[in-house]
Length: 168
Image (cartoon, rainbow, N blue to C red; front, side, top):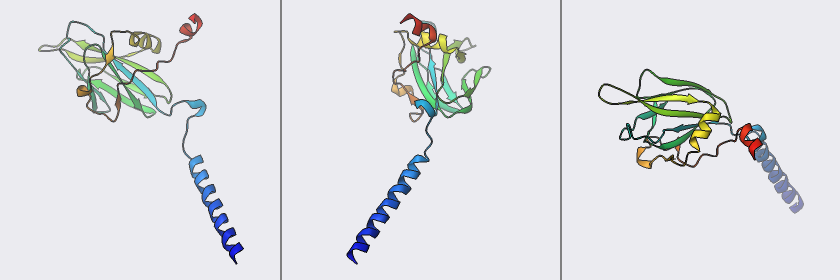
């Protein structure tokens, strides 16, 4: 009788382990170690003109942050279509984000009647990664972040371009 109880316990333990392993095997993971999300880097040159202005940056209508002069931040987005805007209602970026890809958006100031407005410009990966390597850019101050669940000010791990790889 004792043998049957012990064997039953081991069978139950084995079935539980297999069920847990199968459940973990069903989790979605990207192939080749790629991220299942896209990364969008926002940055703004350090310039004297308009340095006191901090235009807001939005993703799909949600305010991410107020962009300070000479700063950067990044967000991870689910693959698919996203609308990126600032407070210049005439401009924006419609982004079809792909998993594992990096995108670069430069925030510029457009002249206004009473004050300047933020304007977003989608940059090529080559130009955006080059411009973000500037030692004049600093992480965005925490008090300017509106959505702390989406915005990261960690130093970006920029992918190298084929030209940079050949120079090494």
